[in-house]
Image 1 (tube, helix red, strand yellow):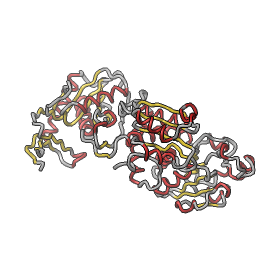
Image 2 (cartoon, chains in turn purple, blue; image 1 turned 90 degrees about the vertical axis):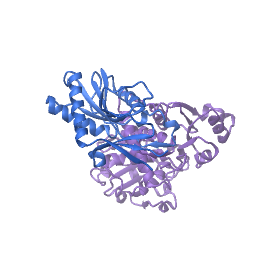
Image 3 (cartoon, chains in turn orange, purple; image 1 turned 135 degrees about the vertical axis):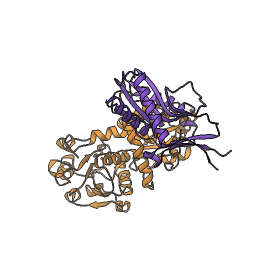
Length: 312
Length: 181
């Protein structure tokens, strides 16, 4: 089975069995991360190029480690220090990179649809590492993997996604991923940060945060994107924390064994209180580890094509 | 059409071969001190478990058994149109300083074993690695020779040696298949 052709751009329209294949492949990859020698020769001789037009240490490092653990060669390009600052277009940058022999291009771009455009331009596999407020599929896959690992299943779970849904590419990918895998997605946040028509994705919008948290198995708290908040979509950080911040009392509304998740980096004391971020229910650090495993699985699966039972 | 040419071992034959290999392992290593068995997925795994049982019957001491998936160590992934599914490697003990006996059902070109050697060495530094196989069908492409062999079966390249085990196949025998031209 192939993963939606050569690229991973979006989790929309990806069948459940493909998501399951990625999550199943990430399990043995996680075992490699726990080893003393974290390296297998699988992608020896392959080249992975990360092209980041937006700052991101976490996602870029996660991809870089994933590629290195599989023995691929990795080149990182930060747009600020590349020819992009000289006015080169995304297409031309991509053509240059692939002419040099890149097998996989990992792209982070502030414009929605940039990775899809790139995928159509180059022969290399393209992985969307976040395109504007559109999608961040690898983050959603690591969320799904973490939940499945902790809960043993995804089907039938109640997942509350809380916060800035409007600017969140993670939320969009999460909604597609969770609903495809049979979980119920509840969205809660300030009305000004709720995109119109989001219900069409299959998620349910709650006006009342406490109602959305009631009995939830997973509480996924989104980051307030301060850098995108220049338009005054909510009165202030203090008020946001009071109205929508997840603290110990609010968390009690969720199921007693609910998982607390956050894609990071966290604004402690704004969308998440420190005692929740560091509490026993928090799996935020596990998400980071699992991110490497899921990206290893994707690099392995995308550089192949189809899959058969081993007959060696 | 694939055709069954001959049956090489029946249930009793497999049982006897494994018992003999168990004795040879104990004899060569002068007991079971520092000994671990690692089965190569898939059919090496039940064979390793059975060998551990035999060794326990004979010596009275338990030998740890691990499972190795060598998919990520194959040397032909880049040339294949299809990629095999990756399964988990479960070696819940340290291999450093140990006598590791790798166990597989059939040895043919030797490439699986080369991959398995790399995989084991990435887990630690064993004192020695030995190799036990139920069937050696020849046609090696690498300088690798098993230490313990259940049965040597000279085959042609147009044939396939197929080991069927109760745990995986629901039957217990070894056959030679004739592959179509």
